[in-house]
Amino acid sequence: MVTLYIPEIFEAATSNEDVWIAIDDSCERIHKATKGWGTDEKGLIDVMGSLSPYERLRVIRRYPMMYGGKELEKLMKEECGGDFGDALQLLAVPCDQADAKIIRKSTRGLGTSEHLLYPVICGRTNDEMDLLKKTWFLRYGSDLTQVLASELSGNLERIVVACLQGIEEVYDEGYHTQEKAEEDAEKFYKAGQGRWGTNEQVIFQTLCQSPPEHLRQINSVYADKYGYTLSKALDKELGGYVRDAALYHLNMKIKPYETAAAEIKKVCAGFGTDEYALTACIVRYQTILRQVDEAHIKAYDKSIIDRINSEVRGDYRKILIALVENAPHH
Image (cartoon, helix red, strand yellow):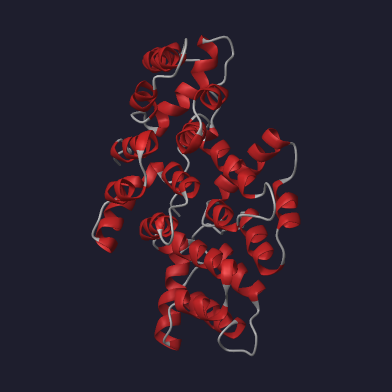
């Protein structure tokens, strides 16, 4: 499965002075853009938008060392507001904390913003889920699974909790055979299209446990035997946010770049753009944005930058475009 977290996020901050020296200039430019009266928004965009995820993590860790313990997140919150400020605040924390902030926002106020929640939780690796749960506890002092179980109900709660468990198996050619794919495809069919009513628990378990390679095998068998892809089967059997979450989880496993591109299009569709959801997408997909952009162009005949230009304005637009333009090459 595609991992959205950079490897360094799982490691402690380095004490190597050479690493810090390389990004000290970026810290100084941020400080210069925010000191005194007013804020140099262009200066912040030039720095924060040009950093790779790897460089930005080092700046986040280094800035407090240079400026009296001042956290970059707090600085951005003080200096900038609106959609632009929201974007800078998500960029001013490590990617696991950005995900935690998005979840927190999705659970604040009246009701739950499911459209913000499930793309953070679904389609993630076991290591990402483990780190996210630890990060949530350290940041907010509560158990993430318990929090979301109390916020959600029914089948949406079931699939979210299943994803949080991080139960995806490691692919093993000796175990994940063609025969097992046929067995799992039949089990999936009997849990959904092959029965009166749907056994969602079996479906969710299959989606969450199966590694991407095996899920593709199941999908191929299912399509050959029953005339439906797994996506079409889920679309037929489920509804609402449960369907959206299940489809997102499945598709992030078997076609991640196309799925991320579709999510970006989705948050811009309809009457007005959901700016926070758009920001969440661009920040979350930073490590794969090049591939996502290629998929977006192929699917919709326009680039992500074209979409941003048509949907948003001002400094907010500039920071999003800078992030896309400076996404890392692989």
